[in-house]
Structure formats: C-alpha cells, structure tokens
Image 1 (cartoon, rainbow, N blue to C red):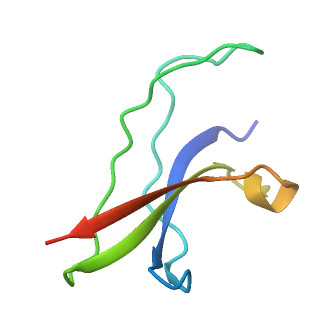
Image 2 (spheres, rainbow, N blue to C red):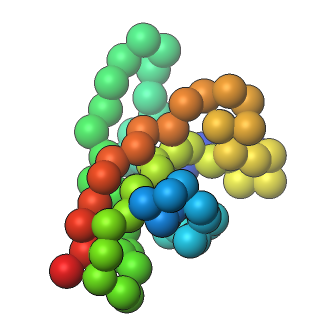
Length: 81
C-alpha cells in the first residue's frame, strides 16, 4: 500500500512552474477522518533570490498528486533572499 506524503512545488511569481516535485515528508502517525495533524515540511528553497509561491500538496506514491483529483493545494507567497 503506497503512503500518502506531504510535498510541494515551487512556482515563479507569475505561477509558472519552477520545481514540480519537491521533497517528500511522511506523517508521524495515521491521520483519521475529520482530524488535523501538524507536519513539519522539509523544504529546499530556490537558489536564486526572488518572490516565489510555495505550493504545498499531498501525493500518493505511484498514484499521483491530490490536486489532480481537485484538492486545492495550499499556496504561500515566499521571498527568498
């Protein structure tokens, strides 16, 4: 059974994709329906300074990204210095 992992994409400020497939972060324990858990996501920032969008999503290995199934990813504006 493939795990569900937290991951991310980096987008440029104009929403063009810079990195489509970020590092994976496993959940410390199973997530029960209608519950919340905090995850410390391991993110590697782009090398060039600038304004970016960090798009956080979930991925099931071998099956695909949750946004492909209409689950809206979290988008955070990030300034890399």
